Image: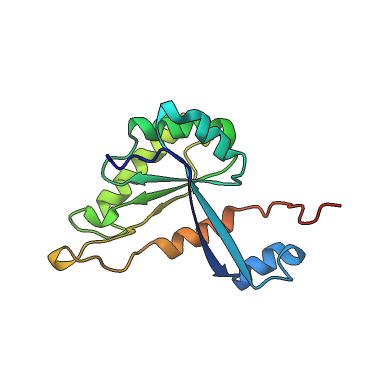
Length: 173
């Protein structure tokens, strides 16, 4: 009723494998034309840690969505702690950057928020140099209309650059 996520959520997207990615990973991707990414949305509340830990067993990579205006909230910090325990790699998607007065990824406000995030992550196992990608998933235009998202392609490229292709057993004898 309150819009709180209590279970793992799943969604997926498929992209065509870029040439640079094919060159980087060679034989691992040579038989394929596309990559599928399955997103597992874990609930962000301390009382649901068991569900989150169960979900992490099927996750290869962590992407943390952070509100560009609010930055680290209580449940965000809880996710970071779990991420430190369960994951090796993290990318931050700093969302809602369109809400800053002068908008845009290169604005001084966005850069200042990224600097604050790096300072906070300096004290985590991920360190201050983790990838942060400014995005606007549903930017608002005139009359509060939803415009085309921006930064999403940059986010996908950042994921591709940092991901390791897991060795999956596709056939069991």
